[in-house]
Length: 298
Image (cartoon, rainbow, N blue to C red; front, side, top):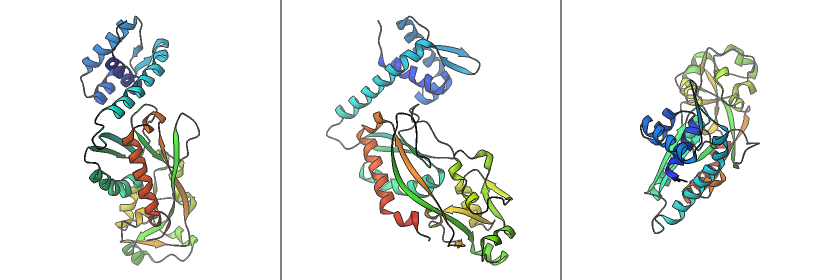
């Protein structure tokens, strides 16, 4: 039987993106190359691995049988490369990290530069966007969420608790008046999430402060809400570590706060890679060293 690990890479890419076009973009090759490799693999195995539909590619029964074997071989190749290649050099390769946009843009983007200075052969790809990418589909190496995983073959560790409070700009408070109590929020402009676009219910911070109050300005990202508050649009519920980056923001009703947690997740196979382990340790160390940012008012 014809066997080629490279063809299995194409098989995994199609199974994870559900399309030849998606696999081509991920592998940085042409659509025809993906089609040719899949056809070669199907011919060598004398079976059909995908059903092509208008909505994309769906694994056949044979494809579902092959998938765990291909994933195991992928893990073996990753470990072989990690343990054999460049043993006399520093860490090398790419680590892709997905994180909530607030943590990614306002903390990790600042901190990870120091790691790259220590490891000149390493590349970091940070995805701080309002959605979670998939570990199981190998879209990323490290995933940081607000929710502890309860299923799946995932290794998880708690990074930290963090506090969220109410903030507004000094100019806004000067124009609209200070707040003396929670009830005063009813007469102020509230900045909030677009509720039906929340990708994690734990991000619904404002429900802990003013659950029934309508908002005239909403953003699908916490970074957008922060900048709206800085510009004087209204009162926003923001993590303390983000407010620390904007001296224009003033705590509103500072005795009120709520808490959430960050959880770091990784595949067991990826956890064996030195570059991934080192990146995880660096992130955890930076979070621990900056505990005051996460738990104390600016």
